[in-house]
Amino acid sequence: MIKAFFDGACEPTNPGGVAAYGAVILRDGQKIWEDSQVFYPKGGHEMETSNNVAEYSGFKAILYHLLAGGLHLEPIEVFGDSNLVIQQMFGRWKIRGGFYVPVALACKKLLEKFPRIRGHWIPREQNSIADELSKAQLIKAGVKFEIQPL
Image (cartoon, rainbow, N blue to C red; front, side, top):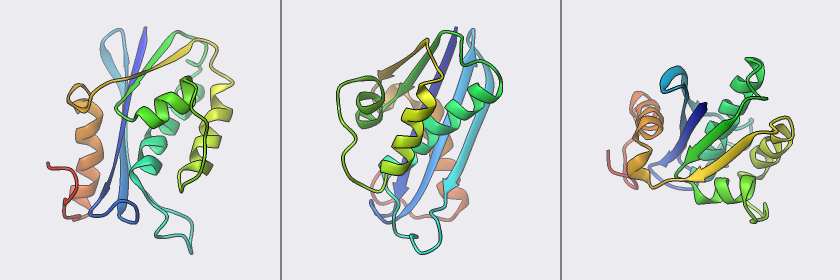
């Protein structure tokens, strides 16, 4: 069984701060991949960052890695503390408006290649594996935390 966790953060302001994500994939309980990066918007859109953009970027990184590794046909459980991402990708919520829309639409398209994937919302306290990765990138970038405590 493959389990994946994603998280995102945007500090010191949301929207408009520095956005970063963390993502982890486990196979049979063993970590097989992790990634964390700062999200850099296209030129001229530097202020178009948000926590939702960061969350979706982590989810997208997971999908890309699974697809590249040929794991997209296996049973996959994805966990995140963003109810927006989980509900829009696996539930009944529609993708509406916001800086996150291009990333969300890209994720929705990628999901078409995953016949056995399910998403689950979890509280932040149960998502520390991805949360720590997303915040590590912000710390490395010298970002001051004002919204989410370390």
